[in-house]
Every structure is written in structure tokens, then in C-alpha cells.
Image 1 (spheres, rainbow, N blue to C red):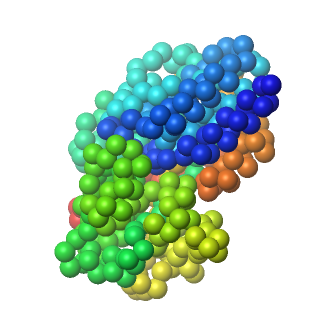
Image 2: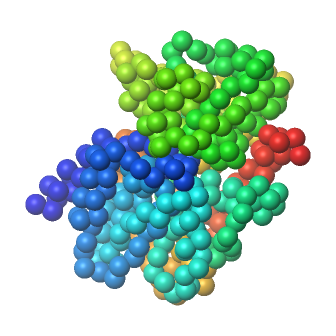
Length: 360
């Protein structure tokens, strides 16, 4: 019966995929009843009697970050019984509320934080350039490893193209949905357009990924920047088209309404979109997306080691990595010091992208 419930839950989670978690705004916390019900049922199925470890997610129920965290908890609870992982959502400030709460906890509190790259970028921009107030210290978070790696995709409607979007950006400017100003989505697209002599305005305030996509189909914005899974269904239905991947490797996971594979060109590399200026290196617009799980800096060493081992074992489970593949996310694993170094390198790239975008 437990295995049957777990299977039903996994199917429900895939069907309920919606928003781009790391780019949800503070007003993106309301989700559909279906997503909420799926998340509620998932929490009911994860109890295994071990010591409770709370995974604090700063993004709304049903978003990518939330669903990854819940899938992680589900699998972690099936492969060991020492710890019982649960997921809680503390939304607000596009992840800042959860980070602030986490940073204020005692170092020995057995909590994990969904420590996304977008949160890291904005925190470092805030402390470096004063772009927003940062009420937490990033040194209080120590990543144990990566759990969520994404490829940002630029989507538009079938009546538009990458060529027409670039022309409009250069002549009158375009509007985008997906994230808030200076989110990683904005940094990627904004820095690219700045190098092309164009500009983009972020239209925020949409209530989650579904409304961000609807803003595009309703003509309120020109493009939507989201994860590969965020518009997977719309691409297959033919209502949205993917026109650019913020990567140096072409993305081939989409199919169109006829079931034919779609190849999405990139901003750099051998598959760079021919519409982009061939003389400009746009690799600075490729920012790591997704995130990690973090413990409190200074936590008990045994707890840190346990969490690291469990994460490695979760990634070794087909139930996790096959699910990651099914929702078009990337299997990308780094642990411990390597993960921490990667985060700092990614932050430097984000600061550089901001410099290009802002002209500072």
C-alpha cells in the first residue's frame, strides 16, 4: 500500500508541475488547488519515524523548488530510517524570508535550507551594490550538495521569433515575465540584450508560473523566461515556443504538437543562435540555475556527514534521478567544498552579468 501511494504521489507531482520555483516572487505563493493537494498528500506519505529534519523552502507550493524538495524528502525517507524529512514553505521576498529565518536559527537546529542560486545572486548584489536589503548572512549557510540544476529557456508565442524579439528589444524594448527584477532570469536575458543594444523590463506581480505564462499568451509581455519543465506542456500543445537556451549546449528535450523533437539554440558555443551577433561572446549570460540544500554553518559534524551521505544515496536512486530527467531538469552533482566553490564562482558570474545589464 505504501508503495502504491508513493507511485500515485509521484505521478501527481509530475502532473502538478507549474512555476519556476527559484524565480517566484513574494506574490507567487498561491498555487492551484491541485498542486496544494499534491504537496499536502506528499507530506503525509514521508513520515518514517526518524528524527525530523525540516527542509525549509522559500518558494510556493507546486513550484519547481518545492517539488524538487518534496521528491528529495520522499526518496530520502524510503532509503533510510534515522531521519524523517519534511518540507515546509516559508514564502516571501522571493526566498529571502526563509533564508532569514534559517540564518537566525541555532547552528544545531536540524533544518535544511533550499539554497538556490537566485537567492545567492540577489543577496550578493544587495550587499555589493545595495540593490535590496539583505537581512541574513550567507556565511551562516553551508551547502551539502546540489539537488536542482536547470536550463533557463526563453519562450515566446508562435507568431513571434527570436529575430523579431531581438529587433523589438533594440527598437522599443520588450517586456518579460518570470522572476523579479534582478532575478537570475532577468540577469541572463538582460545582460544578453544589453550587449545587443536592447533592453527588457520585468513585469512582476504575477501569481505564480501559470500567470507568468498567461501574461505571455495574453500579450501582456513579449517573452517568458522559465525552466525547461515550466512550459513543457505548452510547447507540446503549440501555444508557446522555446527560442533560446541560456546554455552552451543545445536543449533537445522538447517535442512539438506532432511529437517531433525540437532543438533549442543557445547563447554560446557551437549551437549559438544565428540571430545573435557572432562577434559578441554571450557566455556571461549563462548563469547556473537551480540550487542546493544547505545546513547551518557550525552544525554538528556527524549531522553534516549524515546529510551528505543521504544526499549521495538519494541521487543514486532511480526514483530520484529518473524523475529529475522526466521533468527536464539536469543531473548535476557536486558536494561539500566543491559545491561551495561552485556557488562562489557562480556569484561572481552573476555580479558580472549585473555589471553588463546596469552599465556599472
